Image (tube, rainbow, N blue to C red; front, side, top):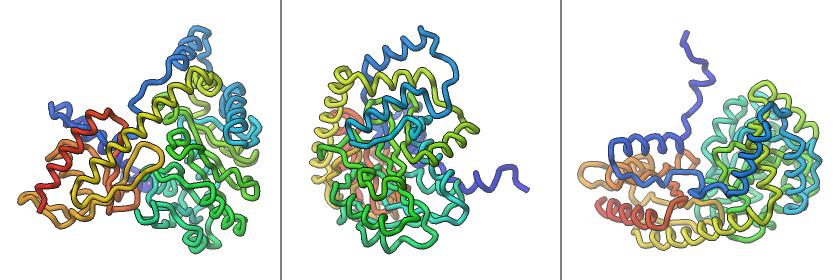
Length: 400
């Protein structure tokens, strides 16, 4: 009998965290690695949010909070959803967790029984399949390639639904592709789900504010399916608050109560100080909005730079991501090529080659469900992006 459980042995290490670790190890050795694998904004948390955290400490707001979060924060979230998304949720329908990642895991563990099917469009965020494993569900993957802008069609979803389907799990804006579903595209998907009353939808909207299309659209807006949608969001990406670890879900009272029950046995409520800071993030419009607008503008400018540089590399086919801070270019042109020492057989080989020869950290697309691509993050300065992509072009040109 082994020491570790079958559950943990079946679980894969996060590919994004693994590449970040490898980058840090090389940097410790004095190697100048440019990290394009990172999944967080390279901006600092707005000052007024930090000041609110300082004040919370001074006020001794340092004790346990309710499992689902303070009433002040849940009221602020409900107000945000009403004003920005035109969605009506009571504070009792909101559960605040230690990041949106926990919110998604809570929802899956509360909805999925062993053998239930969870439909996940590909490409997907690396943790989705592992969360489904932990819930003992069966993941059903729907493939969407670059010619579809990495977005699944209603007919693909319809064909994937079976009597065993319990959940449809997706993100928009999407990590890793940056693809954003339009209102019409979401309505077409909602029409499919309206015909299948047994299917719940987990909508991961953590990149809501980093959206170059303008207004964010949520599948939760369609009333005919709203009771089966679990909306997941948080402050990590939009407010540059990754380390504060605050995410939330909004759902029916029954699902929210179940997630509160589960969370109460695992972590209880998130940091009281982080929660108090998040109230300020959601309510102090003048302080925060200006910083968010600047950040999104910077990301959009970087996207244009990255696309220009990638289009100048033979064989690389980039997608024009409309949200988040990633591009997901097709790189299969280089499969089978070699520089005389290293041969590129797949996406993993290419990422390791770029790390070794160009000292650029990227993430293999297979971790996201598409092994013809790699993920590049542009959450770094323009200067570093130019240097990284120049290195990439030079390294790839050596492959024949």
